[in-house]
Figure 1: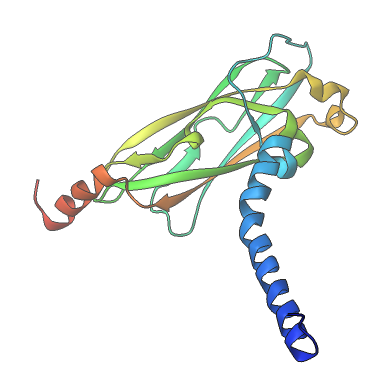
Figure 2 (figure 1 turned 180 degrees about the vertical axis):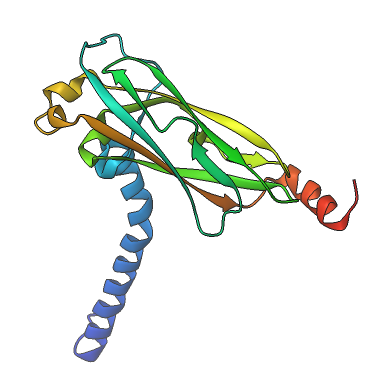
Amino acid sequence: MALSGPAKTVAQTVSLVVVMGGLAWASVPFYDWFCRVTGFGGVPQQVTAGSDDILDQTVKVRFDGTLNSNMAWEFKPVVREMEVRIGETALAFYEAYNPTNRPIAGQASYNVTPYTAGAFFDKIECFCFQEQVLAPGERVQMPVSFFVDPEIVNDRDGRYVHTITLSYTFYEIDLPEGYAALEQDTTTGLN
């Protein structure tokens, strides 16, 4: 049965709303995947090993740490900047402290500026790959192991990058199941 007139218009409008809703729902995971694969928007690459090619050229790497407005932790880089040879594996640390009387779980989001450096900033290991849980009063140093891909010197825009900033923002997430009982014990005074 073919639709005509107002019924056809309603069917087309409903179809358009459904398609647009589906695209909106899929856009966030697709954009996240796209940024991780391409380094677009300053998202660093995740790799399993360091570079075999180490150049004599250096780049300055700055470190920044911030907290989401609802996060009760203290969070900062241990060292604010370091100079590394391009291709050389480097290790930096961030410090987190939970000054509260309850366990708090956190997850870090990250980016690299300038954005053109994102495709060449490779992380081997990082605290940001997993959720972190800090007990009341706990202070930890969390590592990030990285290198700047030597291909940056051959890139049309990347070759002009002399300073890269690695930024993390921690935000609070729900405690994992095993920690939920611990949180209840600390809030009720049971141990």
